Image 1 (cartoon, rainbow, N blue to C red):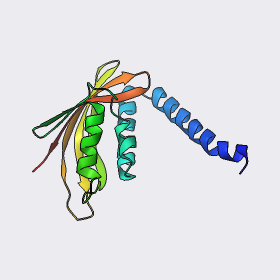
Image 2 (tube, rainbow, N blue to C red):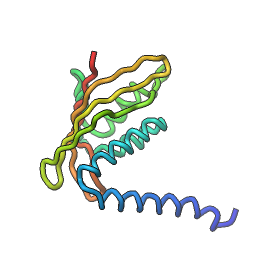
Image 3 (tube, rainbow, N blue to C red):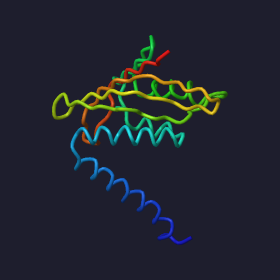
Image 4 (cartoon, helix red, strand yellow):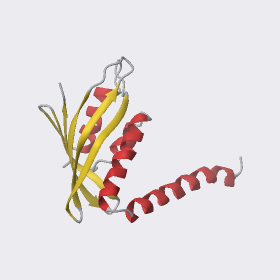
Length: 152
């Protein structure tokens, strides 16, 4: 394969990434946040946990609350997701965010809330509600706090 042939896929990915970033920045803030959630949903459904986590603030100050558990930090949050959805005997299922709503808290802060459901290969369908606090960083909107509660 020629050097040009090797570079074309890389250039294509860069062009798509730049176009997506430009498209997200040109939209209204509420639309940008909803687009981030859509990208996360798509990454989850590809079983791309790192892609899903790209929507979170990559910081030790990230907080994730679920039930009575509190996880602090981006890496511990990723590790928690891996334990629950990528360990032996587990599956990520198909994620759907339903009725997401976004409210702006300022120019660079928002909160989003909605419902989630997972459709698992076993037929189980865990579901619940979420509240997210997001901040706009130079690289775009990121979740800085996630409070997800399963519905019994």
